[in-house]
Structures are given as C-alpha cells and as structure tokens.
Image (cartoon, rainbow, N blue to C red; front, side):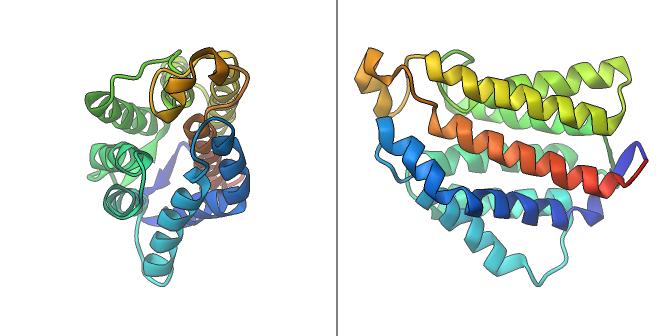
Length: 215
C-alpha cells in the first residue's frame, strides 16, 4: 500500500503520545545537563492532556496533529510549547484536505511544519536545536519520494536520518535557549529538543508503518 487513510490516523497520534510518556524521565535527564530539566515534564504534560481529551473520540491524522499542536502551543510551559505547536499545526494544515496520504504528501506536510518553525525561530541546522533532527528527516522523505522509494522503506530511512540528526547535536555548541549561555560547555551533550523530536518522528513512522500493513 502506497498511502494511508488520513481518517485512520488516530493510532499514529496515540503512538506518539506513548513515545513521549515513556521517555519523560530520559528527556528530563538530557535537558537537565545543560538546560533547566523540565523538557520531559512539559512535553509529557501536553501529550497527556491530548490523550485525556481525545482518546475516546474519533479523529484522523491531521486533525489529531492540529489538536495536539494547539494544546502544546497554548497550554504547556517553556519555549518548546509554541515551537512544537507551530510545527504540528503547520504540518496538519498542509495535509488537512487529504483523504489518502502518500510518501510525497507526508514529506510536504513535515516540510511545511519545518518552514513554519523557521518563521518563528532563526535556528538552522548546526545550531543544536530540534531543527537538526527535523530538517534531515524532511530531506530524507523528500529524497525518497523523488526516487520513488517504497513508503515503508522511506520511513525506515527517515528514522535513521532523524537519529543521526539527533546524535549530531552532541558535538555542537548551543546557539539558542538557556543552554546557549554555556558556550563551549554545551558541547558533549545531546539537545533535548532534538531528542524529543526524534522520539516523535520515530513513533510517527512506526504508527504509519502499521497502517500501511504488510504490503
């Protein structure tokens, strides 16, 4: 199967929620090394609020992304709420009219989310932020679509690109947020936003692969 039904995307969102919930403590530990340590708590709060409100309702992939983004944007503390809220809402907006979502569509949607993020923050790859995870993941999906790659294979490649992007932040100096004050001392530690972004993208990919079935 080369597409998945937008209307069947609830399971993907719930997998993303579980990914954050399962990694709450780990994200707090990563953030605590060069930040204020509340990233895991804040992300868990937002994703769990979404789960509590929507787990008993029917919703599709883009609707779920929009509702989750709205909660993150408006109801969790720290700078990451508006950042993730923007990414998810813009991703959703780019695909809200789609009945079936293809590999090309998903790449375009996440590209729109990245573009929305870069309208509100100046971060680019190399600045030790979630952009270092999201941008290569988008590039991977776009390249796979251009090559006509199988959707599942493309998702596996995207996960690998996201992990490599996350890991690349360890050797970077932070240029944004609280950790940027540490200068060279921020080197040697993963960026918390890049880490949570990888968790979200991997869970999204796993959920979509389940919808694609055994094809």
